[in-house]
Image (cartoon, rainbow, N blue to C red; front, side, top):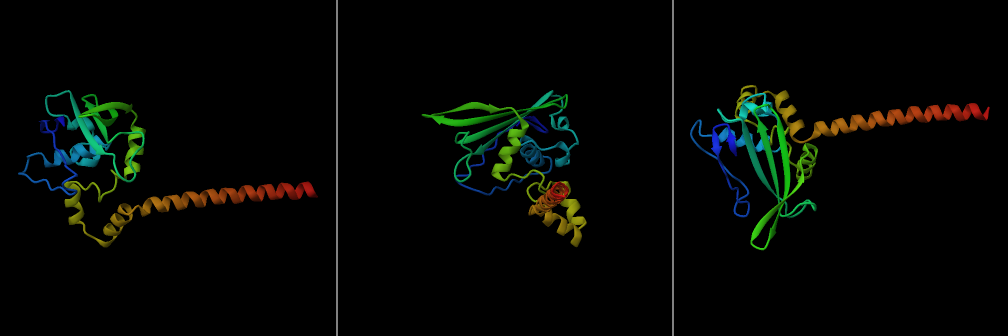
Length: 204
């Protein structure tokens, strides 16, 4: 992170070879929420999803004109993307004009050094990567900020829990898919009926 919220320059290494679960602790105001927000925004999330401002420019460190977030994703094992190397570097640059640019790079090893190759600058390609790796920025179980957790616990009702369950498990998307398919089937039946009527008229 560079010039992001309270952090001027911060690098954190999540060593997945040693651990697959991480806990981050610290005093109030130490920047825990900033780290959480940087992961979300760095992967293309919205400012309003992180409870620190509706606009991404609000996350730029006070007095600075731009912020940069760089995230390295592991691209090995089952489901790895063939167009990228061992790692995928995702960079998001946020300007004070509320504009964002993306750099998606392939990181591969040559000898003892790592090299990077620019693959794309399109947000749509980033969205496809997230979908491939199962990273769901809008899933409340994946990304539940401090304020949202507090609000959820204060309004802990059965209907709220069920709604969370439906969204978290992807049942809402499944329901939309079923509705879409049902709509297509209805259109096809109407077309079939129309064709049948035309054939009947021609026979008579």
